[in-house]
Image 1 (tube, one colour):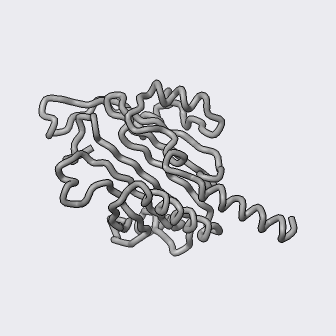
Image 2 (cartoon, rainbow, N blue to C red):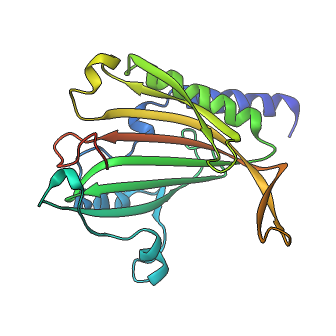
Image 3 (tube, rainbow, N blue to C red):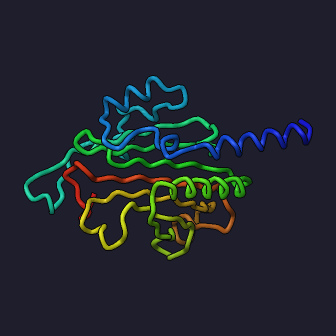
Length: 226
């Protein structure tokens, strides 16, 4: 491939990505039920389901079932989870692209998109992260930066931005509706015989972009926990 063709290809990729919207990133809509999600998944050529729910390990990690929260008192909710893959395209540019869906009482309330980039694609990852935040700022007026750290060591491994439609002083009066976008640097680990656990090295393994949308409207869940 000569330089002219390569430059044209890169230009077209950037142009297509710039046309992405929140609807392109969040292919499922808050409030949809499992029936709706299944129909969309089955008719899509870009999405595939992950794992077999009949596999015990699948349920061990992503278990569906009833759950009680103290603030619900004698009431309870039913949690269910769906894991999907998305092919690489102009809006999902990671080497691997995962979509995790969380439902409560058969209502979708949380959408999590995780895109993994190989360690040689840092500049692409950062470019895509900035594009996602630019797209979100067009619809969510208020924002707040945050960092991601390892709890045991307090080591920073990522940073991002949370986006809101209402100012801070009004958020406690309404149910959570927010989008958070961040990127993570994942480091390789080695097993330490002396400490009998995995030790994080300084060598980069891969990068992640995490895009998360939560909306508790029309659910029993509240800001006290979900």
